[in-house]
Image (cartoon, rainbow, N blue to C red):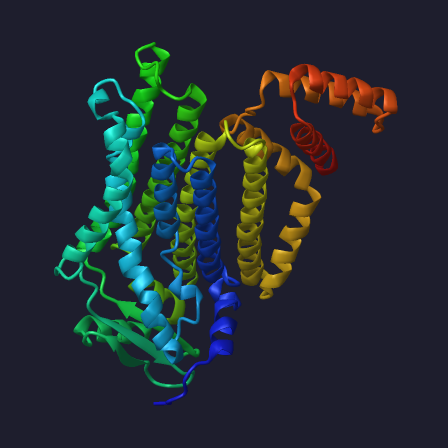
Length: 460
């Protein structure tokens, strides 16, 4: 057996190889970090918009938890090899303790929805005294609950080992990371078989209680979805007059709906994988499909498994975007337009990435050179970029409608008329200034409206 130890170069070469779908998994891990930063930024924006607003405090904390929940692959995207085990020891705290604490806190916060968003049958909970304390008490209770259960057998992730392999060796080696070496770990090594390539990876115990928390969190989102729906229905029937606004509730509802849909898509995909595989699929199967003697069918299952990882972060990012729209539409000018642009960019980039990988895999099986397929797909997407963006804009316009005031819309109409020849004459500028003054629009708002319109022209 060889004692060769992987370095950073080996890790990234393997992560972005054609066998690893050109870095698909690690890109998801990196994207989850960006989603976390996005959620943290949005959280800070909501907090600063109204520091003494208890609803804002509640939503701000919930956004942080949702961002953390999106980063379940974080550690695997940062030098996830034995040489940097000390780094992984630190990241493991985030991967397990911080991650599951965020899940527990978010579940508790979902149960607090009636406190911050009035429901007819639960109107007794909609009190300022409850609002004042619920948003931080859920954090305290969530941390305490995970601290109490984390070492229980059903929740304790007690054993992990590194599997290392150098091409040509008759069998991979096991190196204990923490806990003890288990018999099932040896079984995994046997299934991987002889070392046909160099690699390092880990296998970890996966207790049922930890999986239960992950599953319970989106189910709690479904409950929150039903609560918000009930609140909207009461408002429409005139029984809930103190709801902030129908548009605000609609944004919250769409956010929860997107999260719930992403969860059920994830379940459907895992169900399909289970049927194809003939047994429950876990991270252990990923190791065997990735590094064992995999068939084309195994490669297909591996792609579906990795693709499933992207569904939850996307659902969380969408949920957070709609939460921000619901909370800030009345306090941050142009937030709807900015969110639509962010949505469009993210969706188009995601479509391009998945299409590149599928095209590369297809071409690899046909001519043995996968990159050609990826380049061909990329060029095709660039050629049809405008129709795709138009469809994405139509979709985003449905769930992020414009929240301009009638006065702002009137000014935009006047500005659009003046810009028909792409030139604003001095006379037209005087007329626009008069309109702005009549409608009580400040110079700052006028500048933002005109910039928004000009940006739309440039993109068209």
